[in-house]
Image (cartoon, rainbow, N blue to C red):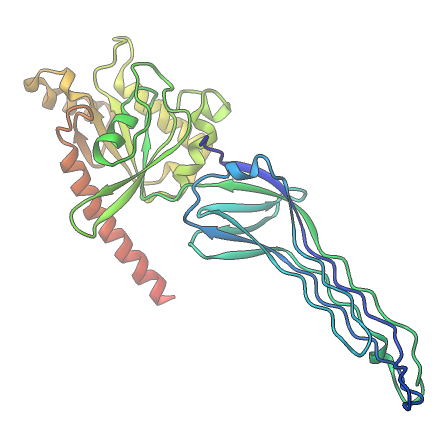
Length: 347
């Protein structure tokens, strides 16, 4: 299924049922009085996070979602039934905006979490409610109110522990294929990846983490060039980034250090907060270099970048060095998640 990370829909809650104006008329019961019942409440519309979904593609064809109307009140003081709510499943990680005001309504980050996006109408009132000592035969009643209607914009931000960042053909898809069961397309030309991919990396028993592979980012992405800018937002939920760099590009005029600097500059333009996220330098395609040159090439790149973060060398094709990277990531994530739990418990 094609990946879709943004959709626009209209939600319409159900109207409230009208109250009833009725009088009791039975033999041997003179002056029976009013007996009109209230209407039922209209159904509301909810968005519910469901981890069984990973795309907004289902919203491409169906654009309008409605809840049931409450039924009208009836004679003999019968209250109308309330309309059923409409529960719309969406992927975990969906941001919900009012499309007219651009107001953020909610952020669905946990499976089962739900947000009411359109409130059902309030029930109408039957004439029985208007009976009083001075108004023995009330004929007034109240109609139900209209349900809320809204135009929504849904944006999906993938939930992953680690995000892969790099120029096209840096080897991101090859790496995620090697360390997980994800099978993104791999080819010997740029922009093979056209939509994000998630891979679950297993590290021993009951230990795993999720990696997000997004389309390659190029210079000028923050101004709309290339494919990566529309998917950079998926990296905003990750705990840290792996910055992949091709150490042996086919075009010898392309310097690996320049690629790293250009992407770092695009991150700053797109989101200063994302640019401050911890990044690990992952030097890929070492299988294309003589073994005795790998260390010196790595040191030269680190010196040129003045890189002070973690550095790893590997070959995503052969798998050499990937186990070291995965083990280090699992160790770091264990510490990060423990800190997050401690912070949450202290609040």
